[in-house]
Image 1 (tube, one colour):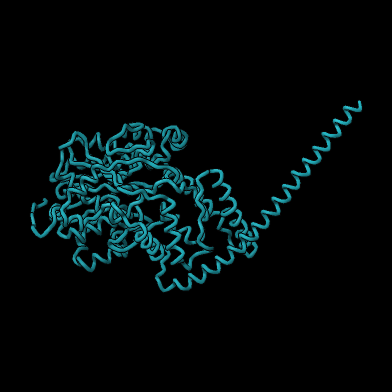
Image 2: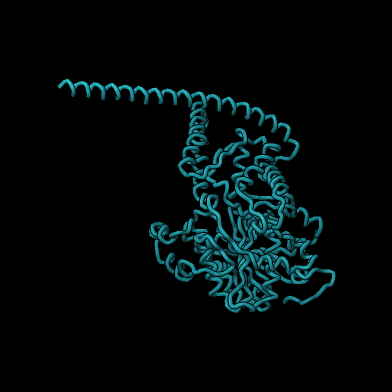
Amino acid sequence: MAIETKNVKLSPIQNFYSNQSIFITGGTGFLGKVLIEKLLRTCSDISCIYVLIRPKKGEEIEQRIEKILDDAVFERVKREVPKYRHKVVPMLGDCSKPDLGLSEADKNILISDVSIIFHVAATVRFDEKLRDAVAINIGGTKEILQISRKIKNLKCIIHVSTAYSNCNRKDVDEKFYKPPITGDDIIKLVSSLEDDKIDAITPTLLDNFPNTYAYTKCIAEQVVLQYGKDLPVGIYRPAIVISTYKEPLEGWIDNIYGPTGALAGGGAGLIRTMNVDKNCIAELIPADLTVNALIATAWNVANNKNEAAEPPIFNYYSTWNRAFTWSEYMNLAMKYGRRTPTTRSIWNYSVTLAKNPYYYRLLLLLLHFIPALIVDIGLLASGNKPRLLKAYRKLNKFAAVTAFFSTSTWNFSNNNIIALWNSLSSKDKELFFFSMNDFDWDDYMKKCIGGIRLYIFKEDASTIPEAKKRMARFDFYHQIVKCVVTIIGFLLLYKLSMFILSFGIIGGVSTISENVIEKSV
């Protein structure tokens, strides 16, 4: 049972978390790790963090949690709060199963001990099979809420959704929108059909939603509205979460999803073009600021529970007082990527953004597939296994499912998140900073590129001089290739123009001949 305490040395948010037991789903993911670390380090008086984990790739939950806590992201908390390890308790479970796959004993622990819940778990694969997306994103949300009703000392539940849960509309306010189908109905539907039948009707069900992720996250919000009645629940909608800015490490990242993957692929010389509208807004948010806002959101919901007719919704995105475009994002990435290249690159760093899908496909052919074909032929000839075409097919598939978000702009409102920021004490604003007003994107991108180099490519600063020499050689070769391609292009254009001209002359002669013949007759 949580014991209420008040420490004048602590901030209001720290006092809220003091002596509380927290349950987190999705704690093994990128955002979940940052959340756990921040809570342990900044709210060190918490009693316990229960983390829902399932066995994976032959590793039991104890092994998985040990591996997570050995990650570089936990180095700072190890120094500052060395006696934290016993507070992180793994619980065997699975969001896609009834009762989250929890044993009766673990379920009873949650019911009697937990007071704060962060439901972060979701399948974020855009091309996930509908059955799996429904089971995790919708079914898991329903199970969380049903278990929450039994918890004795519940203070709040925060359901982590996405700013793109209603991406089928251009204006997205901090409110509920009618879903395409209810959670209960879609669960019944997928449970009554075979996989091939579900696959066949998926495009019809999605309608104007771009993928199963956005579709199921939209329906999950309806589940919160339906099953969260009279519960202290709130919905947190972050935009595209990318590497940390300052905490606990600058530029920390552990995956190559979304925009991070584009930067890593570009830095490696692999990605040469992307289907992006450079003038569209890039709603990107650093992971550490995202987690700070999430932690503050729980405090707010607990303090204002049951005051509104519906659970509050918090849209957290980057455009507060200034928009940041994809063009700016890529230009800054290029700026710092070329200053600190990687020795892992296979070609120089140069990415062309293409808004028009036909132009993009042409660039794919010229910059990805033809070079890949040439390289793979060379690999085959030398007795090696071809692999570049296969890699580009995967990249192309990924690009196809993300283009919707890089070629569109939405109008989000964020009155609730602004009000939350303004309600924080000065100490909490310092401890849990999340304002995007006048955000320094230049400084952030410098740290972001450095983080990709260190945590994705596993290279420290000592390799930069060697990488610069390598990049200079690639730049030289690239210029030669451009010259050759340009010359070939001019030659082909010349041949084509001569053909057209000769065709026109022949046509003209034929016409004159026909006229002469007609007059003669």
